[in-house]
Image (cartoon, rainbow, N blue to C red; front, side, top):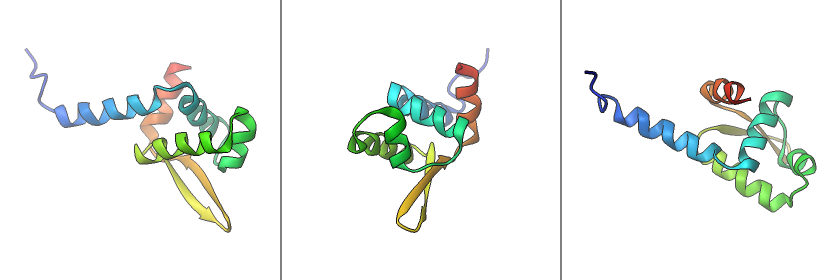
Length: 94
């Protein structure tokens, strides 16, 4: 019988990634970044038809989970997927 708790830390980290993705708006943001490439919150906001503040809150959660990263370019921040596991996972889901 395998030792199920042999890498519990990895299971916890994966669980946190799944929790961060487990919201329709966040999943939509991630899927959009995978399909369309890097973009800023203003572009996400116009595609999602949600207030920019709402999109920013979801982006913040994705960023703190390590799913996306942002790079400042002038006055805007361009976000992209930072974890290749997420691309594979989302592609499997859809």
